[in-house]
Amino acid sequence: MNADEWKRQAARRAVEMVNSGMRLGLGTGSTAAHFVDLLAERVHQGLDVIAVPTSEATRAQAERLGIPLTTLDETPRLDLTVDGADEIDAELRLIKGGGGALLREKIVAAASDRLVVIADKSKVVARLGRFPLPIEVVRFGLASTQLHIIEQAKDAGCFGRIVQRMERDGSPFVTDNSNFILDCAFDEIEEPEILADALGVIPGVVEHGLFLGLADLAILGGEGGVEELWPPEDELF
Ligand code: 5RP
Image 1 (cartoon, helix red, strand yellow):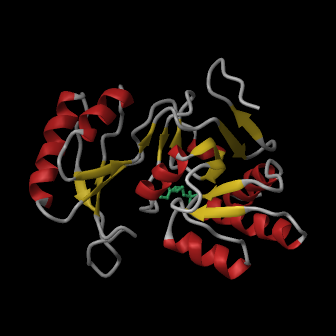
Image 2 (image 1 turned 30 degrees about the vertical axis):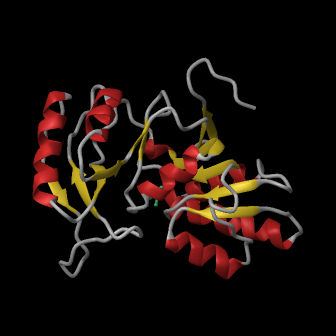
């Protein structure tokens, strides 16, 4: 099996957790796309759900596959969100935003009773930070905001190169919310909570990709089958 098949394994297990009547959040990325695909199969078999997508890409996929969609304005509370992650630590703290959808992903996760993360096992790390932390920023004052991020990150013990995310053609990557992304190569984030608090107070920072205390379960596909990673001393279901 390859990484893509492991992602699908994890997605398949997550789809089994969905029951008729549920209000769902649909994540973004290649693993979440497997979930949307498999969910659509169940919808065609009669599963009755409504879902909020976390990106325009996921919206397009879900619409194409016939999954009934809603918005957080119509449906402000969700039962379950299933999403991927770029890194997962043993406490189920995450780095997300590799696909640039972190803002909507975090809003949807926060609106959900449960966030289930699906990934292949390579996403599990001893310490967050090897994957550059994405930070969504408004366009106005970009250079000033970047300087503030450098200063606040330093105070939180994090150093490293910060680059604006670009498209292949050299134009800036623009999020679904018309903002920019700064990718911060901190390498090791010793105290994610301290960094999150520090980033959260910077004017111009819309959201960062640290998802702390949001995930309830991680389903991990990989060699040897699917494994579940629960937060320490926590029981969910
Ligand atoms: C998008 C995300 C994705 O969930 C994350 O990048 C993982 O993607 P993939 O499943 O393709 O590895 O946070 O903003």
